[in-house]
Length: 325
Image (cartoon, rainbow, N blue to C red; front, side):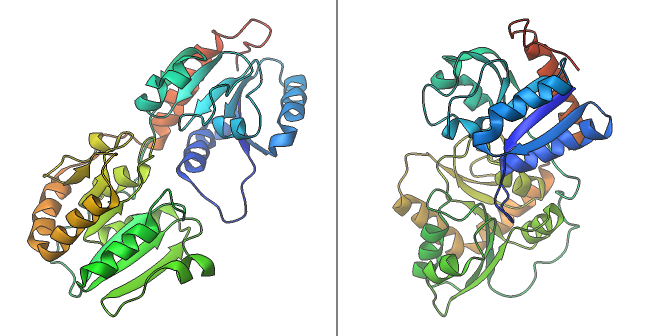
């Protein structure tokens, strides 16, 4: 039995990490060999003890987000969607399941990893190109996906679009994007129309991507870049900083455009303005993007890879904690 512990999330909140955990654990739960348990950070230790009493042979996997409150405890596997913010992210060295090779390779992770395995995310079947059809009429439509905040860059993107003075629409998807304070902080001009939709199901994300001319990721700290992978799978051109695994899904000058992570906002704005004023480049990139299909597998395949990785890594734990299930 594999039991994955994740922090309780606020109502209506979603993220790539939470989606990953739900997607890999659902098939394991259906097969009777996995459980996803949400628990407050202050209750993690008690929850681990309670579950070990019920399932002595279980493999305990703990979301790395818990390290923001206290070092991850002994005797567990760490699931890291990103590099922990602190060097002492665990009480002792632990086996690590990372969702991106760049996370696994980071010195802060390697310094405390007993062993490491990388299990990249998968794709829902809805993330696929649309049938070839003429572009819908109207202004260019830009989509940005992510939890609202400075790290995701929605405000910088909106400001860049407002300054371009080119008729366009901005579609914002993700937790907090539809909050009144977030909406009030975004610029309004006669050339820019906003659509803030908040958290929507994957099928709605895919539909929004297919109906857009460009997906923009203004984040410089993506550990994987799930939204970009989904955009590429839908055949949508992408403009992004080349962080995490984004360069595995976007080929600069082909199905999108990449800037170095250290590039400033002015450089990103300049590239965006060029694309808005030369829409034929978006059309050409879309033709390439439609022919490009992401190599990410279905979530059912990822779930089995995750299960196998957890069982392998459990062997690296001291025998008192290395149960199998």
